[in-house]
Image 1 (spheres, rainbow, N blue to C red):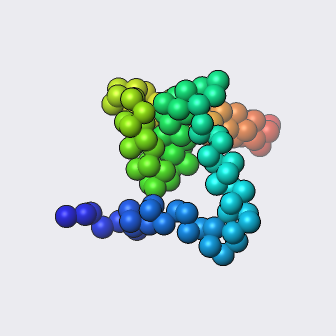
Image 2: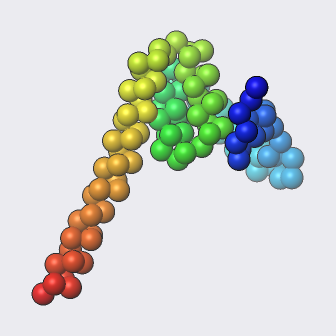
Length: 112
């Protein structure tokens, strides 16, 4: 039994449909998307792991499902996938935490 969520997992398969109402821009996006994920200076497996980490940072459940599958299909193991997620967590957490400097500056300014 599939768990009910706000996001419908079946909608992931409809991703290509986003081009229906704007075919030219959709085609350009998917052409670009396809080029990005081709083997290059980085392997397809490395790119899948990066995408998995970014999916967690942007909190996209469709992307998490897609790049979990893609990472496994491209040879990543569970430890590598979790490590990629921890990299995203560290960066996102660090990005939030570094903004505390702004708060500290403002608090000091107001305390003077």
